[in-house]
Image 1 (tube, rainbow, N blue to C red):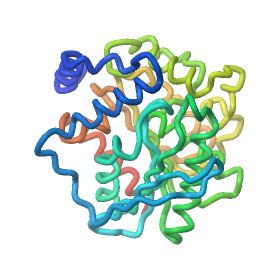
Image 2: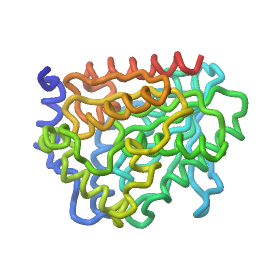
Image 3: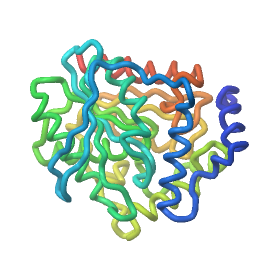
Image 4: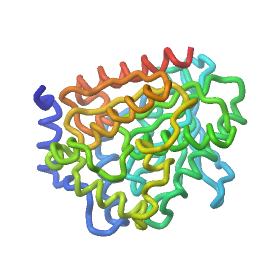
Length: 307
């Protein structure tokens, strides 16, 4: 189907503002630019979604303390979500994804632990994954006996997919679900959607190439199965998955192919394509009606897995 007209308007507005392209020279410049456009959505009069409590804490990680932000929902249904923000492993932080975490907490009745993992290029793979796994283990120990989902969008979804494999292999916390929203799963970037949606839909093919170059500069290591999860040799025994993609996204086929590979390995999968949507739609809550609808369906599917 065609690009959603509300997203067409959003893209036109971002272009008029000079907000795209996303990559701005150095990694530091790109980090600052992404933070600015993320926070610009919260104009004067913006009111964050109310939750019962928000507090900041730290987790002991392999590279030192890892900041986390803990959200308690208005109605606590005894669930737990450990969340990894998106941003190509290079940009993003606790603040940029605060609205999403609030929505997840209230929609699922879950305590949400958002993990501020280290970023590339200063901290390449596997440092962000190491930090996220440390956050998962801390969340499980701090909030025991809760059905526990791990979740993320884009790079955060890739980290969640890798963490699900590592947790399984290392005998880590029992996971009730892995929620992968437009994940990157194939480091070769060889799927048709990469070229079909190479330009014009916020995230571009050249953006992804740049992000990979920052995150995994040594191309010989890009076959690590907790990174190149589509080609991991063993996907059996992983947590049930909810996988969501967007039609106009270079990563669309990454998510679709991973859903099929998980199903072939005997992992229960709920796959939710995103007709008319672009990469990052989960961050446009309250702006694009179709993004709201699909986001709700993703959370409803997660709700069922958490019981």
